[in-house]
Length: 220
Image (tube, rainbow, N blue to C red):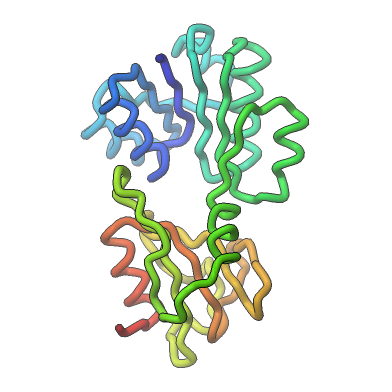
């Protein structure tokens, strides 16, 4: 199959590698110059600098012959636009969108997106099951992608207590996707402040797991 992926973050990168490994023709679109340079060193011609939201870019990469278009940027609006351009203008048979906020699911469905994938919703489903009480729990290992979903209980003496996420310096290898406070889910934004005893759920790679431990002051 010919698969176009919009968004060169960690999800787009690992998805591209996996699909290439399985023999598909894959093109990853990334609009950021520095991120594109990093990706091109490893993925070569499988990555192209361009904005998948723009019809001109999709025209240049042959969206009219794509079997699937997958939008995995960190912005739901961008993912919606990418899939709509592919579906409406280039008649792509199958569109798949990463959904960062589960509340947007109905909008995506009504606007004709074939499949939505929500990491946050997946984590919430796991939370419904009984979880161990450890401060640092590996919930799920995405072996093929080298990623994990982990839970961190914020210690009362953590250096990050009362800090907003915008003021917390974490690398791209650590992505906080959900905060549970007093049994209530919080979909974090840059303004979200961390509080003692919050349960933090993060999508990380191996380096990111250790980074999360150190950042929150979690000692096993």
